[in-house]
Length: 127
Length: 127
DNA sequence: ATTGTTGTGCGACCAGGTTGCAGCAGCGAG
DNA sequence: CTCGCTGCTGCAACCTGGTCGCACAACAAT
Image (tube, rainbow over all chains, first blue to last red; front, top):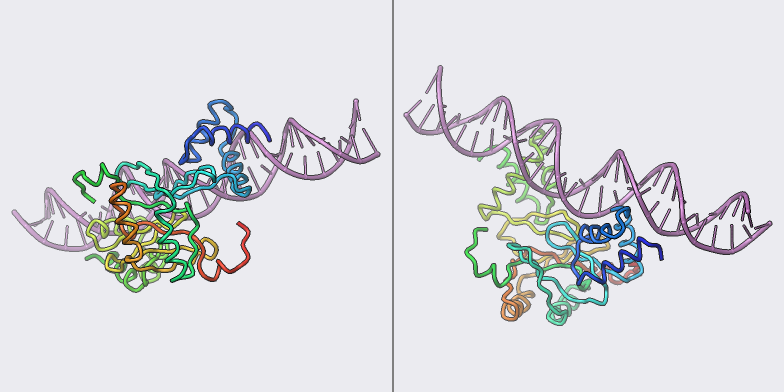
C-alpha cells in the first residue's frame, strides 16, 4: 500500500525470480533512493507472511526471493553460480518417499540443489 | 599433525556428524582453550581439501561438517531444527533425472532439504 | 645458529540480515 | 480543524557466520 511496498512488489514482478534481497534493494532504490535496506527486508518478511513471496536459500547464505506462483526448484552451480530451474514434478517422487519413510514433509522450493551445471560439469575441475 | 588439528579431528569423530563450525570450536576449546576460531575454519578448510571432511549448508547460513565417509542427505526441520539423515539412495533417481535432463550434476550431500519432521508436521503450524 | 616453511593466535574486517528507536504519514474521533 | 493512534519507515547500531593480514612460534634442513 505504501510507496516502498509498491515499488518492491513491482521490482519483484519485473525480476523473473531468484533475486537476492540485495538486488531487490538496488532496483527499488534506483527509483526510490531513500528506501532503506531494512525496509526491504521487513517488507519482504511481511509479503512472506501474506504468502505472496517466498525465499529460497541458495548455497552460500544469501537468499533469493520470488513470487509464490513461480514454483520451481533451483539447481545452483557451485562453479559459476548459475541457477537452473527445474519443475517441481521431478522432485515429487522424492518428496513422496521421504514422507512415507521418514514422515518428513518437504517444504517445496525452499531448498536449492548444489552441484555443477552442464557447462561446468564438463570443465576440468579442481575441487 | 599439530595439536589443534588433532583436537579438531578428534572432535569431529566424536561428534556424530552435522556439527557446526561453532560447535566444533566449542568442543575443541574445552580441551584446548587457546585454539582460535579462525584456526578451526582454516583447518576445516584444509581437511576439506584433503577430502577428509565435507560441509553441508543447512538452511540458515550456518554450515555443518562431517566426515566424508559419513554419506547421507540431511533433512532439516524448519520448525524444530532437527536434522534427519536419509540415505543417498533415495536421491539417486533424482540425481539421474537431473543429469540426463539438465546435464546438472548434483554434488552429493552438499545440500540440505528443508521441511518439517514427523513431529512438527503433525503439529499445528503457523507459517 | 640461520634460514625457511608451515601452522597458529589475534584482531580487524566483511556480508547478509535483524533490531530498537524515533519520526512521520494516514486516518478516524471529537 | 485538531488530536491521538497505529503502522510503516529511515537510520544506525548490532549480531552471526566466516575471512584476512600480520606477526610469531615450532620445527626441519642446512
